[in-house]
Length: 265
Image 1 (cartoon, rainbow, N blue to C red):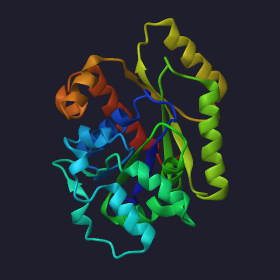
Image 2 (cartoon, rainbow, N blue to C red; image 1 turned 60 degrees about the vertical axis):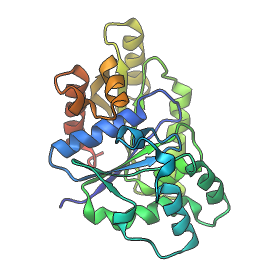
Image 3 (tube, one colour; image 1 turned 45 degrees about the vertical axis):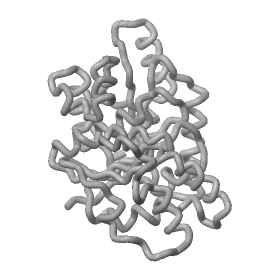
Image 4 (cartoon, rainbow, N blue to C red; image 1 turned 120 degrees about the vertical axis):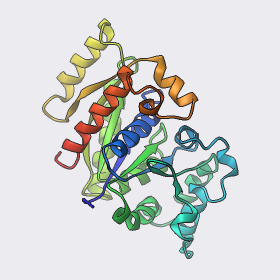
């Protein structure tokens, strides 16, 4: 197995397609023959529900319980007890109680390394570990950045803000200096795109102006389509829901781009 890459999908703004990207990138990479583990690190549990876990609050060993064991230095259960195996890929799910764990992380020396301690032993089992983060720059996101090798930043033209993206990049670079020297920005992914609109063209031009030549902007753009919402509602990837849709083709192309480029940034 090739060296595992841990990739965080991060943006402190909501509505940029982080969970959809984590889900569909994971499934697309799995379809390419990669072994993939998804990490739901957002207390809203949307990624867990996309995986088909309808009642995250009833999970026997959700992420918050596992992190608490790591924090307390307790003996870990066998990974088969907290990693849920799907037909194509695996997931460590979470529920709303992960937000309580975030509070506990603040009181622990080295709490920002807790997720890393959990994931490092799992590298040998996977080609990619993909972390879906929550939409603000709190300690959960810092944990994800401390654990990952690279960050993919989904950006919606409708919500793009130079200030917001600058804040996120500053946080990533601060984590690189103080916590995780190996972290890099894999690139910016444009999501929820309607390429016919002036808004899309203006946002694309501004991204090129601000970050072109400094940070990779992925060639693939994810289109705005109701098919993605329908797939999420059905707890399926867009690839499984409608393989012929524009969004399915886009995420397949994006996965190829990630496979070719992540690790070379």
